Image: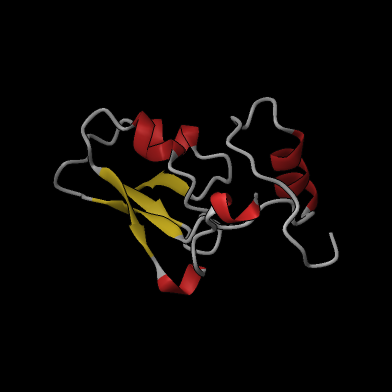
Length: 106
């Protein structure tokens, strides 16, 4: 990969080789979107759907709350889509870098 962008992926964690290589072997196959999940505790039903959906295990249920691993969050939004109560939203996080505009790659 030589510190270069390597792939665009929006696969699920069950079948994506790139996610598997990154999570299980530490191979830097993907980059952050520039966003992170924001969890509204008041709206969260603690169902665990967001944690189950996250390909990077950046969300976990712990002591009656959803706990976020900021470093592990790639901001892909899979957790947001799975949340039935709307408690999860994506927000820009300057510390995660500038979102890639795929239109500029053409």
